[in-house]
Length: 391
Image (tube, rainbow, N blue to C red; front, side, top):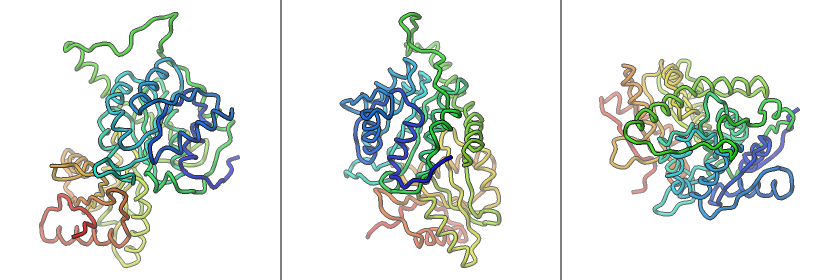
């Protein structure tokens, strides 16, 4: 039986790695993910997790060590954020191209400059095209559960891709929440020991990460694209099996009060829960509005998202990252591209909110909706607007 505990979300992530019986943890501390790897170091040192903890000199080295350990057949975990994730950038492509099932928690944080240790999604959006499966958590329970599913998904022989579990820095990582903690035996029954399909072995030498000359590079990349696209139904399969085993279900896209909504907010991460409370207030005032939350970012849930927004006339897309020199943020850009490719006409307003950890209030969401509706009625485009800018 699961037991309910009050636990900091960072520690819940680390406890999920313990429950998964990871073999190797290679990490470097950086705010706000440090508590995750600090707790894992304690668990290893105290004998609660039989794993190798590799303290390294940089995040680039952390991912390099993970690549080596995963290639040798070990269940491997790391964690990072912000500038550290950016320093890993080169090696993230290597991990996905070599089809190594590494799991990484990202405590989302702003990128410099100016220096900011607070939350937005600028770090992970810089890594969205590195070939990793990526999803966003809304609360602490999701962090624990989806970290467990990340190992199951990554290591499936039909997938063999690294998985990035995103959680908002400080807003989630440093907050104590009630967590249902499953028993070790229950997790062991659902997540068996990792059996590598192909790994480095002195008795059976192989080459990994070879040079891709022009005659083979395109085909190698096509195979990688196919692999992440093919992972989609397998992700759903393992989320469904998790629900059957543990009683908590997750979908790639989840909707809230959208049945008759004329306008919906589109969001990712912990901010979604604030939007839901704002929607409740707007509903009480007679406005037909809802929320569509994107949990699975890569591969993008095309069919589920299209279905989720089908009835709404207006989409209010919340980005938590700037795309410099572009007409819209990354989430809004992808939403517009998707709708265009499907021949679907919607009014899409884009707001960039919560940059550098700035609070976004329920009243501000009400203002965003009012601005979008006013612009739509006037026939004006709302490509992008930054929220709460001080004059």
